[in-house]
Length: 292
Image (cartoon, rainbow, N blue to C red; front, side, top):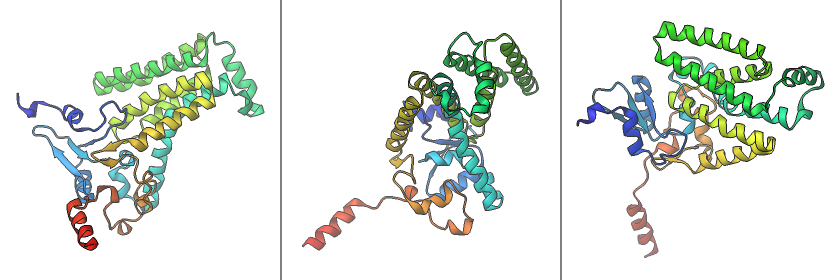
């Protein structure tokens, strides 16, 4: 069997460092401009015969929220869009969990003017908020999967009509509250803001552990799950490169192309994470010579 019959996803599982991590450790792209920019930064591009997709490695977490379109516009416009994408990551994994924690444990954080509308929306629901969230999240995933499998014109129609009909019917039947519909819709929109399909899938999976943590312990559960997520991101590596760099380990010079998109003429050096390592034998020989 020839390797040309395999997709890039098949190759990824053989070369990534942590197979059981929910985060992708390589980046797939079909854009020549992004591939060329990655090579100039010091990354490796793996091409597969018969496939238009290129595998870029090593990669960091923030690279998944960078788009080639950021560099085709003014730097302050690219910075705004990039910050919106990173904010969408937090919204996609935290918003349902925050709603569950507020409704189930922490009603006191709701402003006084919103207490009565929220209470009227949820008091007729016969089960806890976590069941509401699971029902709606699974419904969204079913609609999305159906839209992907169908032809493009029919898939878009199914997504729009199915969402409207099911959303209206499920609220009228008293199975889900109006507020939960809004929360799930905002969460779905925030998840699709991610430019990378692999990271999009990871974000959709990560929201479920946060939802269960919020249903169990409220804000304390969200905080604990957030700490575990940060610990995992700090420990994860992609071909020896820290996955959460330049935040951990912190390298302030590389921040000009992370949360922000500074002017191109300021980014005249390769990111420190992608620079080649020095030859350790030469370093040892130099130290030995100095000691002598």
